[in-house]
Structure formats: C-alpha cells, structure tokens
Figure 1 (cartoon, helix red, strand yellow):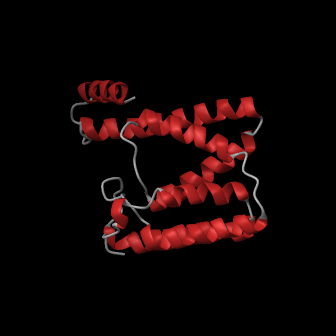
Figure 2: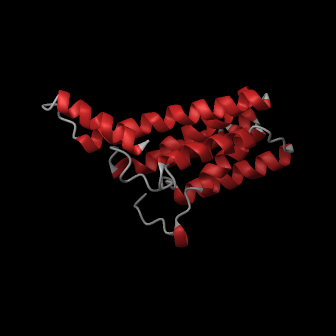
Length: 176
C-alpha cells in the first residue's frame, strides 16, 4: 500500500506541482484511505463468510471511534494493520460474555483510558497538545456509553483498543 500511495502521490504532485501539499503528505493521506477501505473490505468480506456482519461493523466502529480520539500503538506496515484489524474485528464479533464481564471490561477500559489516553498521537494529528485532556475526556465518555449499550462486543473492542494505548514501560509522559 505504501508503494502504491507513493506512486499516486508523486503522480498527483507531477500533474499539480503548485499544490501546497507535499508528496509525503499526499502519500500519508492516501495510505490512510487505502488502510481504511482495505480494512473495511477485508473485514466485511470475512464477516459475510461468518454471518456476523452487523457484529463486525459494530466492533469496527467501536474500535475506530475510540482510536480516533485516544490514539494507540501503530503497526510498522499499513497492510499488517489492515489484516490484524479485520481479523480481530471478526473474532470480536463472536464475543458473548456475561453482564458482569461486560461491566468489568468497561471499567478496566475506563481506567486504562484515564491513565494512557491519548497515546502516540503527537505525529498523527493536527490537534494541539493543549486539547489532549479533552481527547481523554471524550475517550472516557465514549467508553462509558457502554453502560447504556451493555454490549459485550463493544466491551471487548474498546478493551483491546485501551490495551493498545499502553506505552512500553508504562511511559505516559505527555502532559494531560
């Protein structure tokens, strides 16, 4: 995906050399689009085979919404992210745990978000660091919405995302 994104970005820049975006910025945006659409395509294709399409969509949405405001670890290659996200969303779509387990996972996710969110977004967003506490607040409110939904799929999905917030050695040094 990176090579294709670079070729398209370079071609766009060649056709419109005065465009204010650099090849790198165009490539980054194209990679994000390819990753998003690739993940959706692969996850939905797999979900059609499993018969859990609605559940997979809910798992993807829960994960993606929280990830957008909380950040998290990034895999080295976008294709590995696409593959891992698609497979995990389909596995999560089979989640069926007790009400108590759902509540416990939701509480653990809230604690992790309070400690670590946002994480690793400094190079991924244009949002100034002074708004990071707001991102933390939004993350926690989103997770708390599962007390209303009482969804085991959402509980598992957001717990996975919150675990991805944890930095090696527990480092969460950005100012919140």
